Image (cartoon, rainbow, N blue to C red; front, side, top):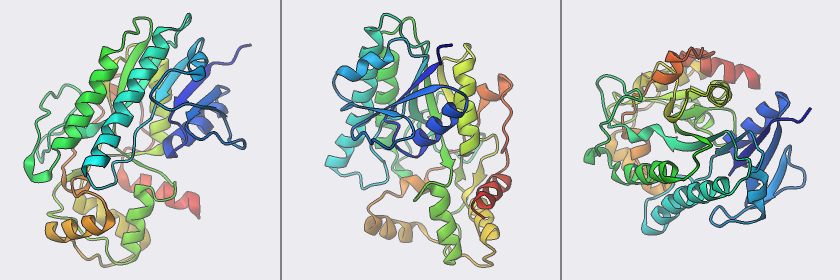
Amino acid sequence: MIKPRLILAGGSGFLGQALAKHFQALGWEVVVFTRSPQANSMAREVRWNAETLGEWARELDGATAVVNLTGRSVDCRYNTRNRHAILASRVNSTRVVGQAIAQCAQPPRVWLNSSSATIYRHTLGPAWDESGTDFAATPEVNDEFSLEVIHAWEQALNEAETPRTRKVALRTTMVLGLARNSVFSVLRRLARLGLGGRMGSGEQFVSWLHETDFLRAVEFVIAHEEFSGAVNFAAPNPVPNHELMRAFRELVRMPVGLPATAWMLEVGAFFLRTETELILKSRRVVPGRLLQAGFEFRFPELRAALAELQGREA
C-alpha cells in the first residue's frame, strides 16, 4: 500500500518535529522542507528557501496534506529589520507553497497554513470563537504590527489559486510542550525562581493548548473535509494570567511569586529583546469549530495539562 504523505514546510522547529513524530507513528511518510537539511533527521528533509519555487515543489505532487509552519520567531524587538523578516517569512512562504500546489498534477487534498489567534481583539469580556470579526488593534497593548502580519498572512493563503486543495488557517494559541525554551519551560523556570507572580494587571486572558491536543487537532482537521477557512487551535478554557502563574507556582511547589508591573515588563522586555504585547494582550479564544465538529480534548483544563508535561519529565 502507498503511504499517505505529509509535507511539513518549515517543519524543523518544536511543532514541526512533534508533527513528524506523530504522523510517522500513524504510518505516514513525512517530508520536511527546511533551509538546513540534517542527515540524521527522523524524517526525510528537503532543502528550500521558503521564497522561490525549486526542486522541492515536486514533493507536493501526490501528497495527502501539507502543513506550512514557516515564520520567523516573534520573540524579538519589533525594529524595522525584524518587522520585515517576520512579515516576509510568513507571506512569502505562504505564496510560494500556493504556487507549488497550483502547478501539481495531483495536488494535496488539504493545506493547513499557520496563523495566530492573536488576530482577535484584546478582550476581558466574552471569548472569541471563529464567528468573531472584530480584529481592531488596541494601542495600549501595542498589537498593531501583529495584526498587520496576520491579516497579510491569511490574505496570502486566501488568494492562493488552489481550487482542488482545501485550505485551513490555523489560528493557534500558545502551545505547551517540553521543547527547550518553550513557553512551558520558561514559565516553570520563572516560578521556581520565585518570579512567578502576575504579569501586569494579571487580568489579561491567556489562551493555550497542550501539544498532544495540537497534534490530534491537526490530524482531525486533515481527516474532516468540512474544515476550511479559519480554525481556532486553543483549549476550551482560557485563564487569566494570574491564574496561569498560580498554576505554575503550584506545579513547582513555590509558595511565593513576585509580581511584575507593566513598567517592569517594559524594562525586562527591552533587555530580553522581546515585546510586552506577548504578555499583556488579553487573548481569550475558544475552539468553536473543533468542539462543534465533535473533537474531544484530552487536556481541556490547564492544571491537568501542566501536570502531564511535568510527569513526562519525571
